[in-house]
Length: 240
Image (cartoon, rainbow, N blue to C red; front, side, top):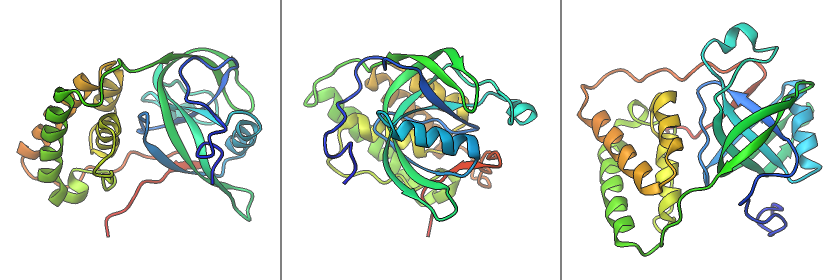
C-alpha cells in the first residue's frame, strides 16, 4: 500500500513550506483527484523523483508553453497555472528508470523559480476549490448533465477521448468532473480554462458545454496526441 493510502501524508490545504520540483510536459494538464501514469527516464527527472521520494513525494505538474521544442534541454517556459501532485505508486525499473502514478492534489499557481539545476523547483501558491456540500441538489443536476454528455461521446472512442474516462459510479462530484476534463480530447487552452475555475460547478458547466460542442461537431479524424519530449512521457489508458 502506498504511503498516501496509509495516511502518512495529510491532504494538502496550504502551500508547501519548501520549493516544489517542477515536471513540465507539453500538452498535459493535471487536475486534482486525477491519477496520471508517468514513465520517467531522463536523468534530471530521475533525480527529481528520487529527491521527491525523500520528502513529501510532491511534484508540480506544469504545462509547457508553445515553442518548448527550441529549449527543451534548457529551461522552456511553462504556464503559471498547474497542479500539485503526490507520487502515489512507483516502480523502480531495472534500467534505473521509473514508472509512477502521480495523483493530483490541488490547483496551484507557480511563482518564483528558485532552482534551475538539475531540474527546476519553484515556490507555489495553493488554489483550493470553492467549498460545497456533497448533497447539494445542484451537484446532482450537474452530475446528470455531465454523465449524459459522456455517454453520448463514449462511442466515438479516440475521436473524443485521449484515454477511456474510467470513474466509479459513486465517485465524488469533483472527481467525476476532473476525470472527464482530464480524459476529454480538448486542447490545452480549454483544459487550462477548466482548471482555472475555482468553483467545481462552474468547471462542470463549462465542461458540459465543451463536450456538447464536441458531440455536435462534424465527425472528423482523431486529433493526434501532442508531441512528447524525448526523455519522459505521460501514459494514459488505451482503447482495446
